[in-house]
Length: 573
Image: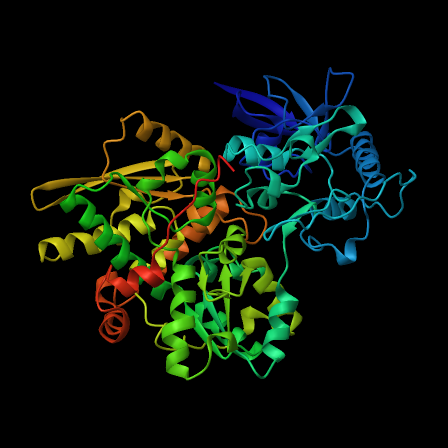
């Protein structure tokens, strides 16, 4: 039902189930917010979005107040502005205001609000008791001196992911966000997905920064330093430089990294193609030999952390394949060092990933050999953006360059790994043609694409109808795992991605990240994929050559040694 109301003297026609904040946004009227996030449930904690509603004695929170027939709203008179200034000044009075060295400097929502409200000095004394910054894990840093208690991180962890690693703990002025009993994240079942970072409006949670360590490695002339770029990075890193989400900057990024000093710039899409052949062959083997079904994908490290901690009894369903990041590292420290004629310890492998959990994955003890890690450093998209800026470059104005060979020859199937449903679509393209020996008439599986948390499809491969499902976000993974436990999952193959939307929504992506931005990044990936000459992983000539020279065949003995692994029951530890 529609209602008529007045906002700032203008007549507005709106749905009655919408809030003042939503209607104002629909009509291009900005109401400042802080605890509100478009993908999370509104809670009205911060009171920054206060507005004046005729007939109400007190100011109302725009994010919580529904519109009504005849309502008269003022979003920006002196009473409203002063109330907002007081709210923000009180927040600042219990906040570490050393903004110039904050990880969120320039993208901080509190910083922006302070400028917008023209706050030049604070009328309230700062009462912050400084706490030690928590660096206790490889992925996520927590700085409670910056926390404004908005609750977004708790919502992301509990409502979006259903992990429950952090909560509101304590009461009243002692209330804080963190693990129960003030434990460190290493002491609880944190998956290091970084979704808490994605929604934090300030600098209270951020990724552990490896930029300086990587630059020091580049300066060390005794080392050869190479970098791999994940599929989704090329449609998101441009945002750090003011470009629109979904803008493809592949060649510009390669050029910038080469100018920074990386000896080789490679494409993780190569090992995404390799993953399809290894995982697809494993899947075919399970179907033919009565293996455990449905088979679950194993590319997402946050997802692996989740199943190890919460559903270890289902680990046999996981593909034994390593992620493309780790396959690349294993090949770099074996096959590639032989090509270069150097020792593995003299090669530094850096990954540019959309994911904070990748930092944890690179340090897993099974991801290396002879005491040498396969991947030495993982940089998030945000870190790569900072690194390029540190060197004085602007990505938008870069010339373009091409990836190095052999790990720069890729297909569209490897590229679409960056979006939810991409792994499954790539797998179906290859599994069908390998099994039947026939060309797939249409390689575009549109019903596995998009942001929906649960998708399914089927394809006839010979006489067998192969049923597949796709989930993204750990909340939806939980639903799928419960169906498998109950014997209700009538699928052969299931793709699981930890983050909403897949890697394009990873915890290491530029902020802000929301569903509108995720959609644009997905469009960027598929628009780019359509232009590629090769769109099926098994057609990649460099992958074929790798098997011929080194790996023999998919799932061979050496392939299992380097490209496959086993996962661990962590629930009982």
